[in-house]
Image (cartoon, rainbow, N blue to C red; front, side, top):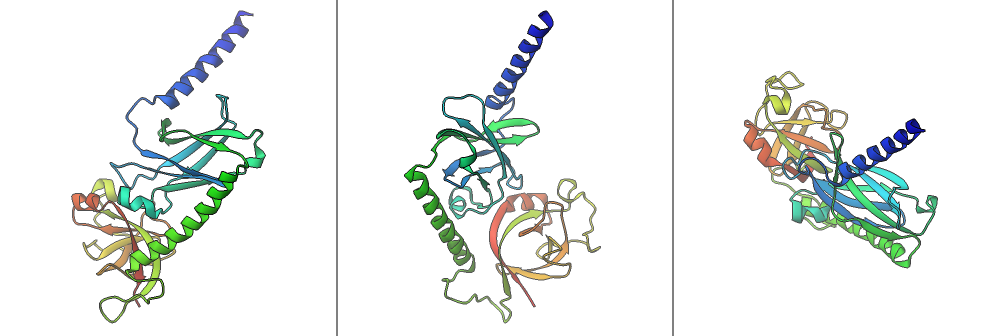
Length: 272
């Protein structure tokens, strides 16, 4: 009997410690963010580390039935989606997240959602919890508005990056404007131990050069590809484990310059 009671108390204590760790993490939160939208199909928001904009946040969403303390569902998302509205406040639009959800799978009609960023096993809460009522007319309106705003944001992002209206062709200085590859997330790196291991040689075997060398996803841009970003032409000579998809890493001759670049969102043109 004593052994059974001790097991029950042990389980209760462990559960309490876990809940406290999630509510009051041991260190300062490495990220900021919040849930910005909930509709009939998805939960969206943003999360970022202002001290390291290349630190992509992993988000965990806990969904509770109203009045209950235990989550009925967990969702996971990566905060690496482009949101134009984040550019004004964060100076970097690549920190949005979105997680699909089918509310019909859950019993009940009233829910509360909490978002956390997870780092090294620690949970850090992001903003305030958000309430959602299943099947409400407002939810349907939100879903429609969210879809409309997303389409507008995508159109504006393309227009802003090219500096033209949607109906105007893209033009650039020089005879070769290049083929637009769309909006890329662009960061900076240098030859230090932290950025690239300090090898002094790129994946192509060449020494990196400022205003020339760029790292890319080689399945999208093979070695030797020449791209234009703004008024500067770069050559793909390197790759990186975190440089996948529509991401590029520009080489700088000092760590300070690489860090000060942060993460920007720009249109990239492939030169012939």
